[in-house]
Length: 59
Image 1 (cartoon, rainbow, N blue to C red):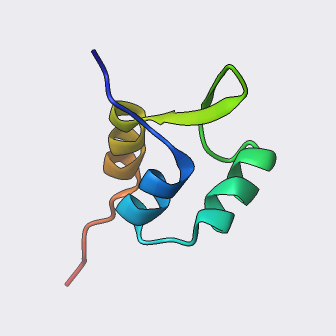
Image 2 (tube, rainbow, N blue to C red):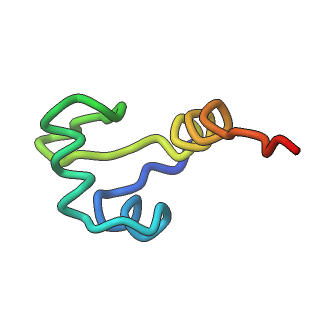
């Protein structure tokens, strides 16, 4: 079963304030699930987003 992160766990993982994550959710800037009113994030989806946004340094 896929691991789901709560807002605090995701904020810690990304090194951001949990309020930043809440703002992103309200602006729909980050994919999330609502399970019985609780906001959760797919760890797999977050890792995919991070992988796509990675930029290689140029010389």
